[in-house]
Image (tube, rainbow, N blue to C red):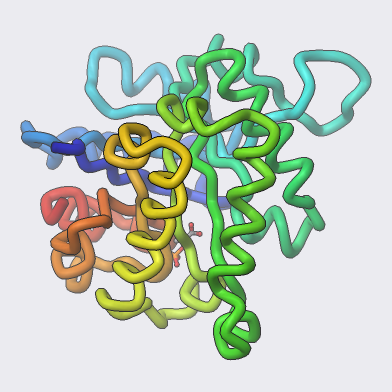
Length: 249
Ligand code: PEP
C-alpha cells in the first residue's frame, strides 16, 4: 500500500514571524498520523527558520524550485546541494506558475528534476493542463508531453525517487476543484502510462492532486484509488485548514 503525502506550497507568502507561527500551530496540531507524510515548502528565505523549527519532527521540508545547475554564474537560482544543506528533502519542480508566469519549458523542468534526483532531493513534478487545453480535449496530450520530457531525460526508474503532482491549471487558486472523477481519471491515466514502461514503478509512485483542495473536499479526493495525497496552496497557509486536510489523508 502506498503512503499518502500532503505538502503545503506556501508560494511567496509570509514573513519570518508568520513562518514561525504557522509551523508552531501545525506541529502542535498534527499528532501521530498513520501512513501519511506531511511536508511544507516555504519561500527560500524562510527555509533556515523552518529547518530550525522542524528539527526532531517528522514534517518534511521542501523548496518551491531547484536549480538545473550545481553552482556558478546563475543569478537568482538555488542549487540542490544548498537546499540539502538547509535540511530540505523535497523540491517542487514545474509548478504551473513557474511554467506559465516565468516561461519555464518542459526541458528546463526536466533538467531541474534531474538535478534534484542526482543529489537525493525528492522532486515533486507538477503537471497539468489549462482550461483551454481541457476544453479542446488535449489534457492527456499535454500532461503526456510534460511527463515524457522527464521520462526521456531521466528514465522511468527515476520515478522511484520522485513524486508527481497532477495540478489542473484551471483549478489552482481559483476555488474550482476537479471533481473526484475528473481527478481520478487523470491520475489513473498517468499511472497507466508509467505502467507501460515499468509496472512496479507505476504501482509505487505517489501521485498527488493539487488545485483548490480544502478541508471540506480533501477526504473525497483522497479516497480515490489513484490519488495519494495533495499539494496544497492557499489552504496550507491556514493551520486549521491544512491540519484538516492532513487528517483527511
Ligand atoms: C498550488 O499552487 O500548488 C495549489 C494547488 O494551489 P491552491 O491549492 O491554492 O489551488
